[in-house]
Image 1: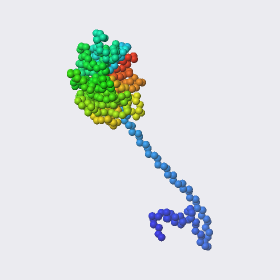
Image 2: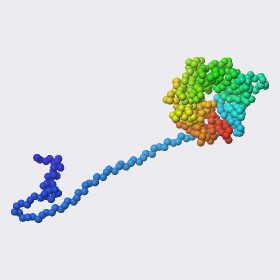
Image 3: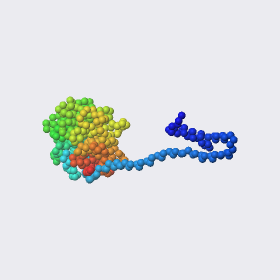
Length: 422
């Protein structure tokens, strides 16, 4: 059998057997009669050290690519900040509200148990004080609440007409009964609009006409009524056992949003057609959480409100939410949480900037004294507004972007005005 060169292991075996002196080979015997040759001592072969196969070195690590740092969101620039009035201890100013033209700023001042409404120019100069409707004799006053006559004036809840020269507010009228009154800037004594023995409040002037939405306790549950300021006719819009509160007109004056419910479970509703209030009623939120104080965006497409819905189920923790104004029973997919851990402002509600792309809110952060923040709906970020003021509340935005809010000075509340940039 002929070995083929492709069998190297057979070739090496034959070679070892044929060559004398190779390890493992026996020398052939000498032939008979031949002289004895000296033994050949084979030199030992050097020991063969097996090759050490080194493990492959791990590849050199690539230099880490430096990821570009995400720059922190810069704070909003505060161009100017000033108090509206001089400071005085013993009084609290709250609930500022710009007139539609931005010329006037109305706010409420409390001293003891008395509350009155003040109207100032935007530069702080006083215009007028709205308090109570005086009467010459207490005996001439009708007694609406079981013979109670208040010695203390209480006026609050002002709402402006579209021109910014007239307003409606709630007052006890120095009579012990809370009704609605119509006033004028630099005008005479306010005119009484409602005379029912039940409390009327939460007035909201239509942005396009002489109609007023308000809440009345005359139906024993708290319902929303419509008042025509020309004819003085009144129309009931809501029915039911729960309380219907804080009506808010859409920017086009065609729809009303409000909150309704009881105890700690309110939801957001919209009436689309005021001529058919029951048929056009829509419920925007539902569930066991509490939704408060809806306010329309300037374009009328969305509603901002407060909610205490959160994964932890902490009913004391509030968030600022936005929901489309169209549709029914908004779900978690349509409700957008804009900011968490916020301070609720039940008197004025969420504060939209005039562009409709931003909301100003107060962060619930006692260590930082409840600072102001700006939420950008387009970018999804929150930017601090470094005013340096403490325990902020009651934010309202003018059409030109100026802010008015209250803050504490030596434990007393004062109104501030801020102009912001970028």
